[in-house]
Image 1 (cartoon, helix red, strand yellow):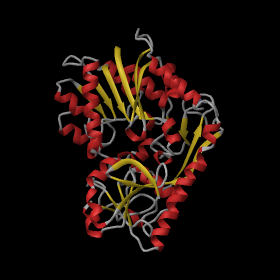
Image 2: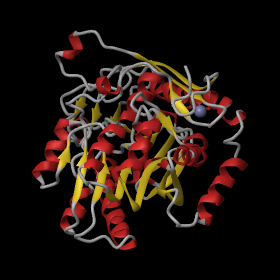
Image 3: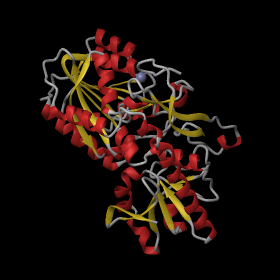
Image 4: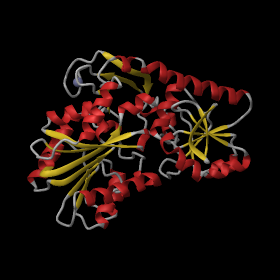
Length: 418
Ligand SMILES: [Zn+2]
């Protein structure tokens, strides 16, 4: 296999998580009687452009099925994040009723509704039918397609070039990053801005976030890799922000390379930091697997210990990262009998691979487990606040990443070793 960006042959494995089903392929009762398809889950690093990427195995449209269960609006902290971003960017770029905004992967309209409310014309691009329908119902125009250079050229021909293109948690999810970036170039007005948010590879490595690896997540991005992809497409990054979302993300601000905007010192500073931390050297990529294995081993021994001592453990949050963790660790309902989730679209279904049932929140109060394993550790503080009542029966929260820890709502950021 060659690098998806620079086509150099890939020789170096960064992480091998064995085989797993697509992490968003939640199963119904009927699906449980049918065979389940597993794909290899292996990441390579390109030693020419430092793009970390999944092994090639399947087409994107087989993974993003129409019943894709993730609706962005179910997380209140993500909605707040979207509202804050919208207010900031509308002011920073002086957007008004004469501007045009495109959001790629607009999901259920969780973000563009802020632009609609400010009377700024916008367009969402979203391939999954269920979420696109929710956005349309809120008055947000949506093109139900995958974004790439072809769609971008078509929109540009129709006079729909944008002053602002937004891509939140989509850049890492596109199979062909070069084609996607060429699309950004094609649909951007001459003086326009692109902002992309994606999890930062440096934080993934530092914080053992191997559970953010799944098939739909094709690229694991450092600023140095994105900088290179942008430049190859005739774009440049003129600012970068570091965000706490998804365990540590970057928001890059890009424009056409011909735009006279100067590169900001923040970009150079972070590029230097990445180089100092070793992101342009193979060693850091080669020592990651044992660290991921330790997280898996610790969780598994802990769950076995609880089972032997007669304690019950439930999980909260049927998130993609939970599926990666549970499938890599080989956890099944005997060790973790159920997962609670607030999204009605997931309730009554089963986690792919592990076949752990997904129940509504009320199951916690009914069954009173001894421990709740929070799978989406990135929103652990929000979850602990919502579920604070579990302490009335002596139940405790735990998280497995970056290391197995007991968590408390009073000190949400403190990790206490188990
Ligand atoms: Zn490469």
